Length: 166
Length: 453
Image (cartoon, rainbow over all chains, first blue to last red):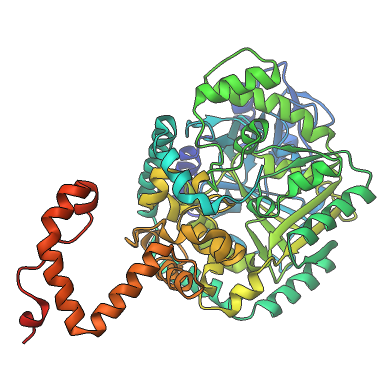
């Protein structure tokens, strides 16, 4: 799949509108330098370290912990991204724990550029008829406006979402 | 709590109108949502989208039994246990049985209007289970012992000072009226509940027939928590929430959040298919889906069947001049605003709800706002006709209409009436004052018979 620069730009623009913090990294070195800026050195980081991108990210001197439940930060490669809505997609395919993008206060999503779809329809058209047990489309950090419609970022899910397009 | 007070709509509305804090909160909420909705719709072709959405919803309603059967087969194949509940009592007892057989003590609950409709919490608490609402708004009203006043933002009738005092009283925290601080308190208290709950109960915005999936739109993340952290997940939804397939979802992902809160999309859209399977690290180990009818099959056969297209976005209430003034509690049952008038009179019967049919100016703003083209205005009118035919009109109105009927049948009586009205108008005005005279039309100078060609 060839993803145009316009699609990537639209994805980053819409993701930023949803209060996610967006970055672009040309390669592993840049990815690690971004991580070192956004993740504190003493923070407990969960990273599945399964994909090449995740391994590259984890090699950057972050303090890794084995489980997401007690981690402050999750760094993981996500399944896809959608430009139309500025969303990332996390799924349970391949034995991934989707809660890793929910419980820690800070979620860092690594998005390979060729996994960015232009529209929701484009994304769903490529999905198998039987979806994985859990497929979650995430747009920005968790939020509420339940008290006087005052927007508060960070309720039960992450308080901060960083998206790095690699 | 939870007693239906729709018959007291006029009294409820009159006291709501005198509540300045409520009026201010309602104005703030409905104005904000209205403006944000208008802005959000600029990025899509609203009229094309709602045509499409309406057609998809009608397709499901026209073939509902087949869609329910298909959904049930697919969800079962994915590992869910699907239950059918004919009414609220059946749904509540099915859920209590599941909890009991799993030795559940505490339940973390996501927002569900259907569970409000069945009074699920009250039932389960009576059976000895601890139920914790985890949506911030629902948590606030649960602490206060109230019901939702809006289907999207349930605690919209409370201001920050009231929430601050409530938290200080009930949670033993320092008083704060900063929504930021209050939200973080709820995050801390409820995180503990998510991690220790024996079961999660949620609603669902949609169910997908082709894949047997549940779809849940949330912003806070509590919906994700209750459906994936506890080992047992029970979802309760009404039978008409089905969409044919995943391919239909984008249309509703574009319409529902925009119509509800003016967001392009909610923070989370979860598509849950069956329970945790071998090799999965996510999902409840046991998933139960309770499909509630509670009168919907009956509505489907009648002339207001299109109300079942409703996707519960709340847009009709936000634009309704009556709802905006009196708020949700005045309607006295689960669903307020225009869709609430129709659904309440249909589901609970005219005898328990007939004053609600007056809670509309028939201005049609709801029709224009509805993302699935439910003809609310026409349905409210139809329910007004039904109120008369079922004999629930106020006695004075029936008597007046009866007398008018006699008069129009007799030209003599009619013109006598006109002459009497002209003669006694000044007497009536000085005796009754503006309150009486102001409500009556001025007497005609020229009798009706002479105005006819």
